[in-house]
Length: 548
Image 1 (tube, rainbow, N blue to C red):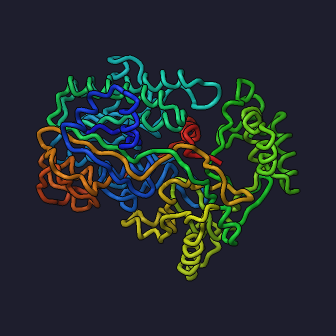
Image 2: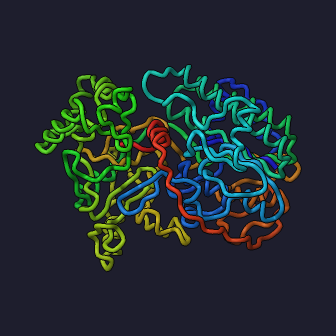
Image 3: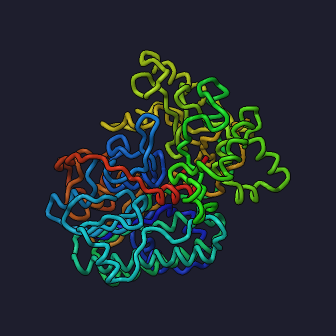
């Protein structure tokens, strides 16, 4: 049984590619010969949380990953597989005597032991630990170079053609690695994920020639895998969709500030935003000599620190980076300045959230929500626990009434977290879930004078992804109406003749015959490991997942 993951794939994108004459014979054959339709994603519909939901069949309140960042008090780290608190598909299959090969699936580093092989994907370092140990060396020796990420950073002067060449190269690496490992391990289950189908929209927004090149490269690799591995059943699934944003930036912290829930501070004196600004393009060999801090992108010596101190002083006087930015935009100089001014200087002059002093705040825009600063829970909490419900309800009522400048509701839903998350890890999520209208509004954590602005990114995630299935176990005439991300794992199990887990939130889709439900062995707890990988943080910033 083969599961192909296409990050951000959705019917509108494939329809556009068909109109443009894209050559996708292998993907098209799966869609045309089998069953296909939209696959509703979860909230939040972002890679780091959605893929664990897909491969565990559970909501984030059970598996424990709500975004790219894991928070402890006011500190943070990039998530990894030790944050996932439910068994992955391949671990469930291992408990039933079946083997797996898994390549490039996000949030799978560091891997646990199971019968088979795993090469981690997104948020892993570029030289990740694999299973079994030493596997990456074997893959590279057998197939040539293998990388988790394209070489370019996504910024600077990299041309679209250079980016596309790198996307196609890494796509080929996924296919080569999977075919090598499938031949070596002869697994019962295979899972290969292609990330570039999402990345191209973030790094080349609106450039559909680039999108077409990426999808055609993916189709080539899917065809090669089908020919080499000859799976009895194949399912193609995505974690979410993607599309153009025609709405607004909706700046949650600005709204909360204006309503008195969030406190701000100027001059770089607030807590870090956790929406990291990158400084990479300004770094060269001299940085190590002048005191560059690789963690926070600031400098402790040299000319930049003088500029930062000047910006801090100006910000305290009310001349913030935001105000300077508006003037530069009117003069048409903003893009030039951003390319050539150290980001530490911009940060030093920015009005930011004073997290310990605030009653509530948004910490990461992809979490889709607001967190309360609760006494006894956060290190410097200011909301008494007995006032938690009242403060939360006040925030829900306030945000529910927010309208965009065109008079439309800004949000489809504002609700307590228990309306979306259930399980032992639910309290790690946001306290108030905020669902932007039609995912056409971009939730932002930025603090600006105005709560609304143009979308930070012209293309971003949408709620509906894609599912398609064909082969021996698939009823091509069955309906996929109402298919949800959580249904993928139970359906994979059923296609292999196994019952869905009682702990799962999804059901077996009607395209596969269900064999009931059962309990599976619970996951053995393991100590959380820090990611501590600056390159991963930089990559997330490149794609707009971490920003200030």
